[in-house]
Amino acid sequence: MGKLIRIEFLKIKKSNVSNAAIGITLISLLTTLSGMTAIKETSPEGIWESLYIITMSTYSLFFYPILISIVVTMMVRLEYQNNMWKVLFANPVNKMKIYMAKLSCIFIIVGLAIGVTTLGMVTFGVIKTGDFTNIPSYIVLTPLKAYVASLAAITILYFISLRFKNFFIPLSIGFLGIFTSFFTTVSDKLYPFNPLGYASVLILKGNNTENFNMLILISAILMLITLFFIRFSFNNKDIT
Amino acid sequence: MKLKNFICSEFIKLKKSYIFLIMLIFPLINALATYIVFNNTLKNVNKNAFLSGSNAWNYVFLENSVSTKWLFLMVALLSVIVALIHGLDRDTNSLKTILATPLKRESYYIYKFTITFVLMMVVIVINTLLLFTVGKIVGVTAAIEIKSILKLLATQTLTIVGICAIQNYFSVFSKNILSAISIGVICSIVGLGLCSEQPAIAKFFPYSYPIFLNQSKGLDINTGIIFSLVYGLIFMIFGTIKFKKADIA
Image (tube, rainbow over all chains, first blue to last red; front, side, top):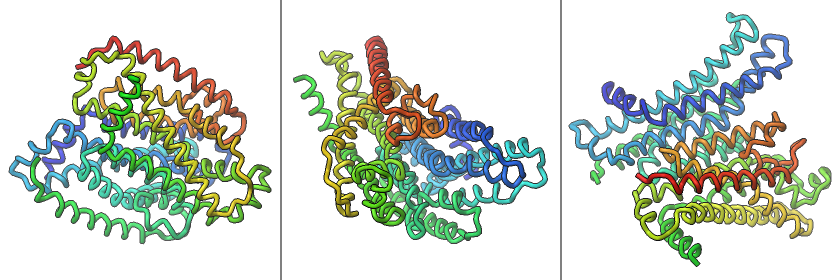
């Protein structure tokens, strides 16, 4: 399994997947940098809070869902484009392991992207406040929670992109996820029905007193169900 | 005549590619979102429209584009459609075959642009019709002003000319079709940000022209239309010249 994941990383080394992830992260950090000059707060708590809002309001609603959909689509299209699924499945490895290696690779890339964004935000905050001992815990914890909650969305998009050979169906569904997260973050009742918007809901509402651990649980269950679907619909598929 | 044939054959190609489904789903979800917004947060449309001092229908359209970010999604959908239309020929390697026929290269480039533009116009018209339905359901009582609706349709279609041309350019000449989509979507987010934060720069950034329709401060829609047409013309001429000389491998 470890070897398979390492091979996946070797594949994407010179492809556009890493370029897209790095580009999206850089642009989101640039928006933070441009918004930082406008902060007029003086107390450290105020600075941290406005920094969090500036970075994460655009990141959770736009950049993160786009990053997910583009990375998933590109990773799967890589194989369809060169007709590589045949070669991969001809190996004496369990099919599910191949699928899982690709999925883990996607998880790692997305995790790295959100981690680097959070790290950049923390660095900006430390520079602005000049104090690295009193970093509020939600600055680091909420993106982490959001990442865990979005694993279901990634798995669902992965399933869709395996199911349809055409690249633009998973991409369109990912974009529809951005669309729907606008009104699911507004309404109080609808958000559990939109797995693609869990990350946005958690980031935008999670630093308040409300408890959203339920979402993480739902996300984990959804992820397991989707994995079972992948197991049963693709494991015995013919190699075409 | 040639254009008609080309468009007909292109539609036959697109028939089994789910594109028409997606073109319907995006406006449908948008209409649903508008309905939810009006049902949950902005109750009593007629009173709100009266308070904001505008016609109730214009209020519905403006609120749709502001609160559900339809204009941003429209640009994202555009970049996906353009990439799909070019990807159809590139993935199956049939571009070589098409260019071996007596069809001129310039015409090929211009026809593809025309098709994307026509499809986007269809999407915009569908969206407007669905919004009418939503307005009727929510209970707008004002009379329909056909003049202002036509103006809205015209401004929406004219502001995306520049983006259409730029996306065509990137889709033809970029190595990976998905990078063209990434450029389109990320640039539209940047345009959305520029419109709200730095309107001075937004005047020169083609991806922010459709968002001028949100009527934020200091942004005139007429400048957006003119600049969009200029960008479209520049990229079409530049792209046609480059495509004429390019090697198709």
